Image (cartoon, rainbow over all chains, first blue to last red):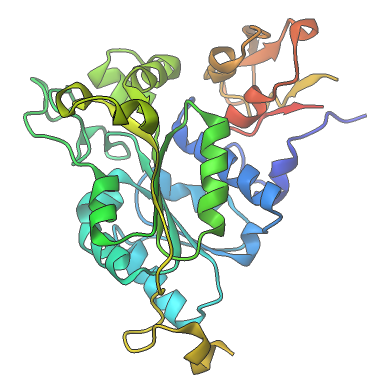
Amino acid sequence: MSQPINPLRKYIREGKLPHFFCPGCGCGQILNAFLQACDELSVDPSRMVIIGGVGCTARIPVYLKGDVLHGVHGRTLAWATGIKLHKPQTKVVIFAGDGDVASIGGNHLIHAARRNLDVLVVVANNFNYAMTGGQVAPMTPSQVRTMTTPFGNPEPSFDICELVVTAGATYVAREATGRPVQLERTLKKALTHEGFALVEVLSQCPTNYGRYALRSGDPAVTLKWIMDRCITKAQADKLSKEEKAGKFVLGEFVDFKRPIFCGSSVYDLESCECCE
Amino acid sequence: MAVYIDKNLCKGCGLCIHFCPKNVFDITDEINKKGFNVAAPTRQKDCIQCKLCERSCPDLAIVVE
């Protein structure tokens, strides 16, 4: 009798595993959690359009069966806008890294959130540009050593959740790969949400971030470094602004509904002729 | 009930050891065809089937049945 295999592998293209992620990369955990969420909701990833830009995280869609796009740095939301305007009923999921969506695609991000485009953006925040060798990124925490900032990052970091909340996103949450059950629950909620949903996942990069910032290539060390700095939203509400500095707040920030974008003049799906 | 690891997919990252609350896993001396030392559930009788290893494995290599 052959050995049983993980049931989630039915969603993976045959012959594509083992994937290209480094040992212990958080992107693999995000892939696992996403497939688990899809499996529990009984939605088939092959019925969605899944988009990745450029970077380590953007390789996640490559392993999935179905329609996937992979290739233009930061322009994932521009593609998603086109797909949603042509076929509004198609579920579009974007996997992007922090360098992809927060720096190069930053402009697309705020405007997609402002328009309330009906997509799910999963941002894997690994605190650096991992694929090119660990350079400093907009979301690298302050005073952290990276390949290009050997004396510590002098710049303050970026809070992408606060940015999209301000821009008008309707579902925003932050989770970490160190909490797989909560991550899966958040992804399940975000998948069923109608409107612009963004889930930031704090993810470990042992190869580049771990080795430069923490002087260890062990994934568990990077994971522990992230989890030591995480507090839940309920805990954060009791703390002052000074006490919260340098901490990552996990949890849901907003969850509400407003009209979704369906072309610049059409905001109501029922009155839209192409959607019948 | 048992824990199975696909030896060809395992990269020996040790996240299953980090997540397992009952310390079921160990990195063994066995090397797979990609050149990684694979993990193995050496203390299966301690397993409580919480499935944290299956959910947290980045390589989809573990299955708990």
